Image (cartoon, rainbow, N blue to C red; front, side, top):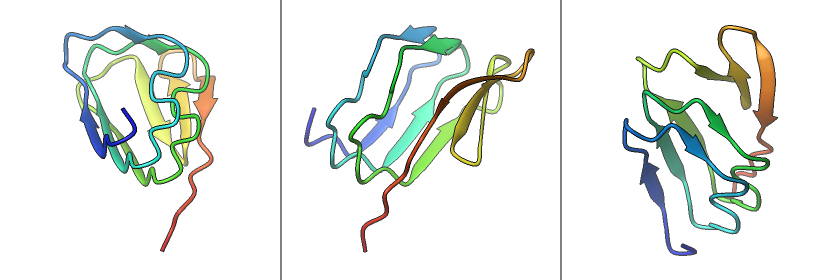
Length: 87
């Protein structure tokens, strides 16, 4: 996975385990699908090149704002990202 630069999640995926992208240091862009509900701890831990995370517009479960993942219906904090930009 260390060479992965972009990830687009299938709309049929409903969950990820813990640290699914651990150490993907070249990962820059992630798009999460419309049915994703949950994910484990630290989904983007050590993804030092990550610049953008998008959630499918039809996803009724999650929102991502200011580098923070929230559960929509409860506004529960799920995770936050510390994005490191390299120039």
